[in-house]
Structure formats: C-alpha cells, structure tokens
Image 1 (cartoon, rainbow, N blue to C red):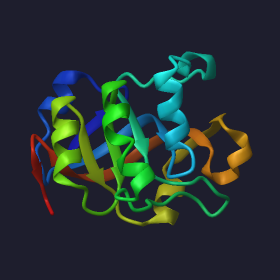
Image 2 (cartoon, rainbow, N blue to C red):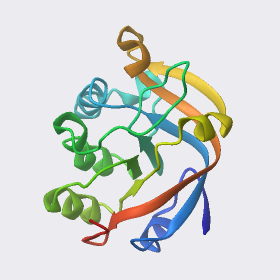
Image 3 (cartoon, rainbow, N blue to C red):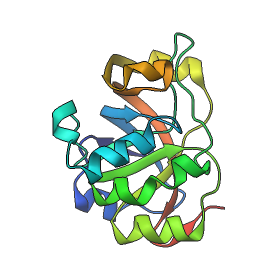
Length: 167
C-alpha cells in the first residue's frame, strides 16, 4: 500500500498503477452533483481563490457531508463525470468515488496526469478517519455544499489512470 499525503505532486500521481491500494492523508475536497458544476464555473471565471479553493495537487471526493458521515456516490452521474476533466485541468490529481467512468473521461484525466480511485462505501470507518470538516463554498446546498476535510488513512483503490481502468 502506498501512503499519500495531499497536496500530491505530479511525480506521485504519475507513479500510480491501476489496482494499487493507496492510503490518503491530508486535506481533501468533497462535492457531488449539486456543487461540482458550480466549482467548474468558478474555475472558468477564475474565482476559486475568492473562496479559498486551491485545487493544485488536490483530491475531490464524490460525497455529501452529513451528520451520518461521508460515503462515496456514483461518479458516473452526468454532473459529476463532466467535472473530471475541467477539475483535472485546474489541478485536481485524484477523483474519489465509485462506479465505472467512460473511456473519454479516463483519457481526459490521463492527459492531465490525474487518477480516479474507488473508495468502499464504509461510512462509519471514514467518519473515524475524518479529523476536520470545514464548509468552503455554497452553504445553500446544505450537505451537498463544497467541504474540505482533513483525513487520515482514507484507503482507496486506483481504478483509472494512464488510459487503463479496472472496469
């Protein structure tokens, strides 16, 4: 198992292989279908800094943040999957979620030296490994707003990189 700490370097991501298990430490962003299109719009408008969002070397976890904890949602939902490439171009190096993504998305993340990793739906375990939780942007979306978590030992499996997929 590779232990990774955010923000990730280009070299770290380039060295990952499909099927590898990784353990993630540091700060990660959380967002799903309601907020990711809004974040992509902030990128287009060059306004991410206004919200304190720094995507360079970052992770986006496809989840909502609720009192019950965090758990992955399907990454192949239109609003989520369509965010992979613009977010990767803006510096996101890892997308965490579940489910198969399209070949087009795999090619797009590969072109931007990013990866997709799947994380098991183990809400209780992930809650125990969440050290901090901060609302970053779009509070009107409630649990689907953009959050930043500080995590320790979040385990995931690299599901897509270098034009390869486990699916």
